[in-house]
Image (cartoon, rainbow, N blue to C red; front, side, top):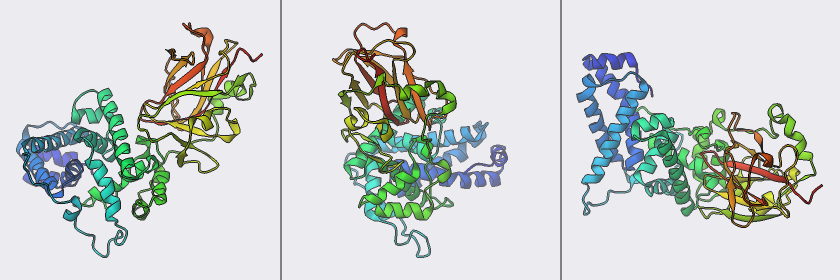
Length: 427
């Protein structure tokens, strides 16, 4: 909800009527923010009142040149109330009742009647509850309030890079908690949408359902929510999502099926060049979540991730299979070739992928020695297929190259299609 800046200016000038309008306009969003941080309805109501009281007392001395500045101040104040409450809690404080017991059940006329599933929502809610407060906060600001990292920095302090890394860690932690409770990686965005909807229901004047911008996580909303249907615990969650229209078609990320011809026309012959071969083995891999790797198999689904090994995706895999190994942040795979990589005319090594091509990449000797290559740059159109090349003539290596390592980084999950190299044994 936006604040009428003219009304806000009138409130700052002393108009009591305008001040009342401002607080009423701000209340739903502040309450939802606090409810998502505290996971306690009654506490969120109390802290919301305190936050708005601070606004009433201080509005004449505050400077709000923009909507962004107004909400940054309110969220900072609200977050401070949460932190103060946590500090003042004693070790002997009796735990509050379950959050679900505080919720008003929907009236019979509401569309979610019969679809609300306590087990499903409780599972998602408990996963959020298991997170550190700063992790939960950055997820709420990024995914539900759709703030940029610059805006998040105005609320949480620190640099944009610090808050970007905080969000990455928070996302991984939430995935881990959801997995512990039976929800797979493909359920991640759907779970966020359900959490956003449930916590919005208690907001006066708030819409009954929420959407999550898939672009913030680079995951297809439709696929994520529909994938909940395949899990026993997610059946009702998917029904809620579909009933409320949580699948926001305009925000779902779609990908093209081939590398962009205008940008990669000069590289297309590499895909057919028999001098470039696929890896002969997987030298190593790293999966910090320990859930196993996943990928996209077009023969099964063009959007839904399935369990996939690095070997079946990258080792001697025919290009026409179109398998795409997903490399989330901090996940890496190293491939080896059956002979050293050869320096020849033009590119000597390349990989193809879907989504943003940015990753950390290394050439290796296949036995523990690595050399980091220049980081690929993103030139826009991330939600397409890309070809990234490397020329050994431009690199001075301290060893004989025979392997290649690629590390996922950033908030977009790189989908690795293939790795190919020119080998010395190939003439």
